[in-house]
Length: 105
Picture 1 (spheres, rainbow, N blue to C red):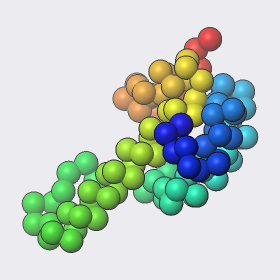
Picture 2 (cartoon, rainbow, N blue to C red; picture 1 turned 90 degrees about the horizontal axis):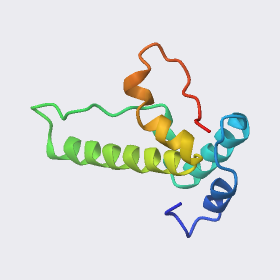
Picture 3 (tube, rainbow, N blue to C red; picture 1 turned 90 degrees about the vertical axis):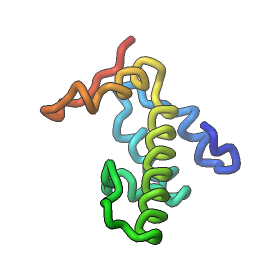
Picture 4 (cartoon, rainbow, N blue to C red; picture 1 turned 30 degrees about the horizontal axis):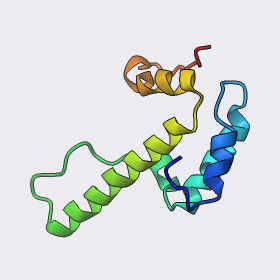
């Protein structure tokens, strides 16, 4: 976990998602993201592109949203066991029906 200054990062490191511990892992992830002020990224997806008529202030807000979303995604994947992290990288593209990703042993 790259946020070494945050003691909650150690909890995510020692309790990685394995597929069987989803509830505990999600609680720990949410606590960590909340402490990093990134919890909103689980519920709010930024637009893929900036509107053509976006003001400089709107562009700055979008840049922050994109940066925060990327950080949260990296924390999420880093907090998964190796099989789960690899699976989740492609889960969005592969799972149009919303089926949960499964960890590989």
